Length: 535
Image 1 (tube, rainbow, N blue to C red):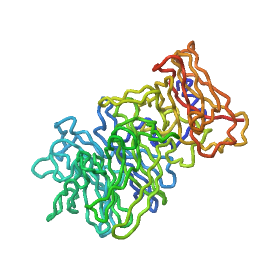
Image 2 (cartoon, rainbow, N blue to C red):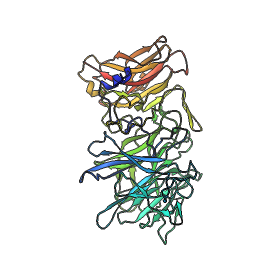
Image 3 (cartoon, rainbow, N blue to C red):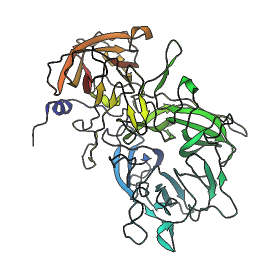
Image 4 (cartoon, rainbow, N blue to C red):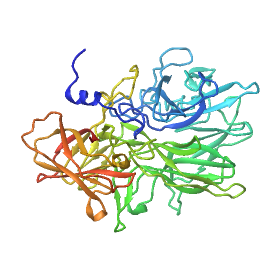
């Protein structure tokens, strides 16, 4: 076996963190995640959480890919997600021959899955893979297992390369308690219909498609709902909850308009009318400063898609973030939320807005003594706000550097030597932050140090380490600092800095790196990973 490079060996010699955001391995890119708790088909009586999404695997300036994969985790351990394989591919027709249609159209966008149970108790899982190829965008596939494989069930009898049905972009499906089935879809406009349970694809005879179920962002009539895309549907008690990507108003939250916002509406009936509820997650990492101004602390724009799911009595929102400098490397994220339902006609559904953090399922705070990949940052901004120009982002500060890989056969997909996501372009004036760490684990420990693995870029610079907030004016406390020297070689190195004791810090506080140098808008270093150590 070949000897590992220094920084990979450093990874292998210590415990690597699990469960942080993004909650899947950092080399995997699964946006548009729809989470469901289903029975484990291999362990009767046990349940798993399955995540169904797109797969940003093309890596050539396009989102999504031509296959869809599924990951799952036992409800008993949400920090260990397992790759369950490719569940569907979009390149074959009913006759088993390759489809020679539009190349872009055969890319699979955001899917959904529904479960039906027949009179004998047999379960069937229905996948809506969301291929936008002409004649196939209503595609539905089924399986007797939640992890597939899925086979198309609605081929057109007169054309083996087309399907029949009404569903369109970003499909979502609800099987109601009474067995009736409803479908939702749309891009810029929202559509819905009751589906025929015999086909799970076509409009139920005697019913019609509902147009503009949720008002579009294009309607300038005081409309608050502002639907853009990313339909998702859940039923909670006696209420129907519709989750979607909302285009915010210009000036809303004190910021420019953005579609990086997951919102919800609710109703007493599956097809409405609907009441707008509010924001579930703002993937810009929006935060309000002590003086009342609003700061974007993460990627300034993009799209997000996901849904909500109750696991072990606790509710979570699943969504995705952009990584890199374009919109084609999206990572799966999660955050806890509070959900309250007033039952009865006209009852209100309240979903508290989640916070964009690094914690993932480690909701009590990350372990400071575990080694953390730098790419789990939930705060990354420069001295000037980042800008979006078409599908590209222009940063004056840090961004996540994608590390694509195909490591599905590995025994441990989280193994630290390849579970990497460096933070690039750390410039003067940049702030890199992690919400939150459980600093109570450091109490009573002596000789506290912070060990950082990084690649210097030939610039004299200073990096300050703060907890709570990134500066004193905002109530933060500086606990240490280290220098970068211009004559250091452009190669991975470990920097160790003594830090102040954290006995007075709360159990759950943020950690920040603040960069300064004389050169402006020039990369000072690339951060690979870090951890605290003590005697």
